[in-house]
Length: 60
Image (cartoon, rainbow, N blue to C red; front, side, top):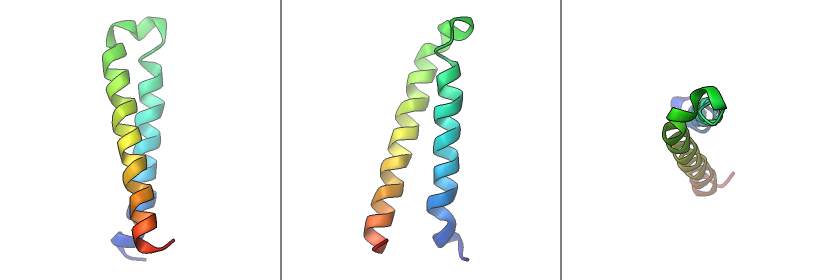
């Protein structure tokens, strides 16, 4: 399997990590970092969009 074939999966893992760590930023203990949490969600969403675009472009 080439890197090009693995790219959507690798991006999916990174996106999931963005959502996972971003969600922690909304807990009361980390409330001062809520803006970072929002940006983690934005980045995670953008990566998901890229994954779907790659899949559509490649015909999957």
